[in-house]
Length: 184
Image 1: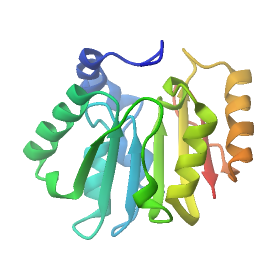
Image 2: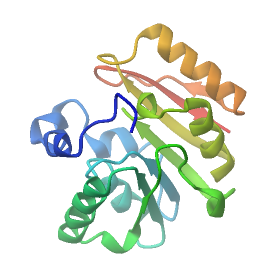
Image 3: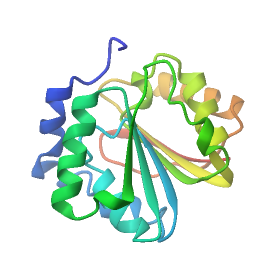
Image 4: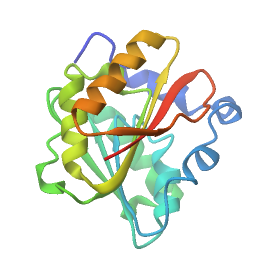
């Protein structure tokens, strides 16, 4: 794991109800996610956004949640089962150096990288793998915490994304974060 990877036990704190005041999953995701979509969520932790993604894609869609920590995925599966959306979520354990998405080439409609891209040891590879998995016209919402990522670092992330074939569509205002909706 990279030096900035969120420890599995901190995943419980990220689920707190107070977070909804700043980052309500439905409010943040509804403009981008529609029923029937296939959604990729790298670094889902214990599923703070994953459960809402599963609700939004409906019974005909699916969410692929990829994490490097088995304990995060175990927590996500437990929560998804309790919420009744486990059948819409596929969890994948990946090594830190690759998300291993080759089987998803051109199948993803939307990807969410919320407070996670800075944790990847090879950020250009993250963007390249995500771009390869996205359909033409698919989008990636990148949201990075101002606490860990400076404005200059975020600008550099956007340059890396452009190299992978993304263009910035819009920069939504998200509390405590830098954000950009990138389109392939």
